[in-house]
Length: 229
Picture (cartoon, rainbow, N blue to C red):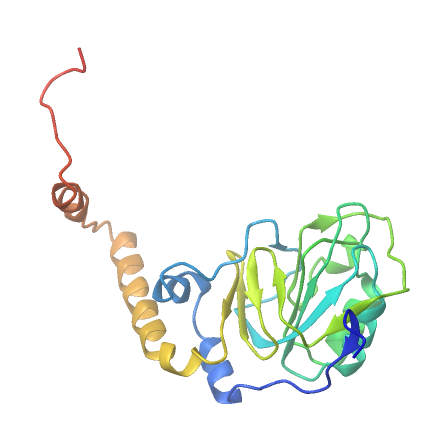
């Protein structure tokens, strides 16, 4: 096998209804349900203007830094509802631009996440496809390879396997491992509902802050009635 320069054409796919159901949730309560261990770093941020939560299935690309050949191939392979996950960025070269974004939108991808910069910023104003990246640079990529498609990658601090469920909103991007997605769903839904209830109380001026002193007491924190000296 040509390790480092290969393409896998198949990947495990989650239930499409489950992917759609996760799209009703914001990323933060789902992350809470996963013990806050699933979020990509803030290096990646939303640079387009979609509505609602991005929810789709990971199509992974391990690109050579500054090279887009395998990204182009992955776009050709991508199907409706996929989220293109690209690792291998570098600060001085963009990996994608307007032509690629518009092609992805024409294929009805659910979104794009690039661990590195992109270019053609103006086209993303009002652009409905979720596009996440670290920023912009006019410097373009090479198209030489090597690289791999549909293999495990690390993108913005998170391990992503082909077929994982990817959620994104203006807070950022989280990864739900495909093998855990079904069993996690009820906990994610309950976390989402609790978050809605707390937010509604906050809008009404109702705040429960008693948990702070309770947590400090359980941890044995000493409260000294007086100044430090």
